[in-house]
Image (cartoon, rainbow, N blue to C red; front, side, top):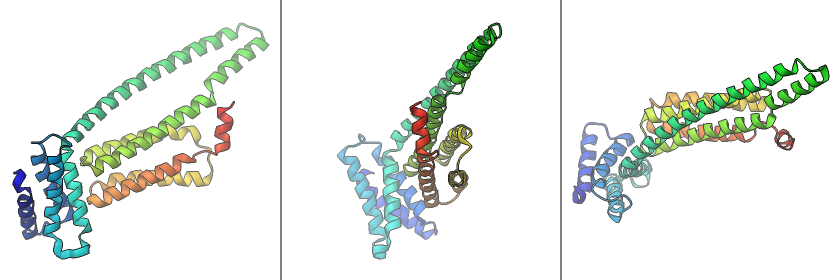
Length: 266
C-alpha cells in the first residue's frame, strides 16, 4: 500500500462523495486510517513516514483543488488525520502512561491523607495534655497547635497545586482532542480537571465579584466542553481552547497578589 496511498485515499474520498458523506470529519478519518496502516511498517520519525504524510495531504489537495483558496478545512482535516495516523501507537503509549500516573496519584493522595490524619491525632493529643497545665501554658499550647493547623502557607501551596493540576488536565484534554484521543479519554481529562478545580475552590471563597464571575465562566466552560463531545470535531476543539484560556485567566489572579506575597513572607 505505501506506493498507492494517494490512490487509496482518493478512492475513499470519491466513495464518500458518492454517498454524501464527504465532510471534514470523514476526510480526517480516511486519511488517518490510510496513514496508520502504512506508517506501521516503518520506524517512527523516519523519512518514509514523513513522505507518507506528504502524500496523504497531497491526495486530499488534488481531490479538492477545484475549490481554489477555499479548501483550508479539507487541508486541515487531512493534516490532522495524517498526524493522528502516524502517532496512533505513541498515543496509545501516552494513554497507558497517563493511566499509570493516575494510579500513582491516587496512591499518593491516600498516603498524604493518612499522614494528615496522623498529624491531626498527634496535635489533638498535644492539646489534650495542655488541659492539665496552667491557663497561660494551655493558651500557649492551643495557640501553637492552631497556628500549625491553620498554616496559610500550607493552604496556599495546596490551592496552587490543585489549580496547576486542573490546568494540566485541561491541557491534556486539548492535546488528546487534537492528536486522536477518543471522546471518552477527553471526557476523563475534563472530569479530572473538575476534580482538582473543586479541591482548589473551597480554600478561597471570600473573593471579589470579578473573580467569582470567572469561576462561573470556568464551570460553564467545563460543562460545555463535556456536552460538545457529542457534537462536531471542530466545535469540540474550539470549546476546549476556550476552556484552557478561561482556566488560565482565572487561576492567574484568583487572589490579590499583595495578599499572596504577604502570606509567603510571614
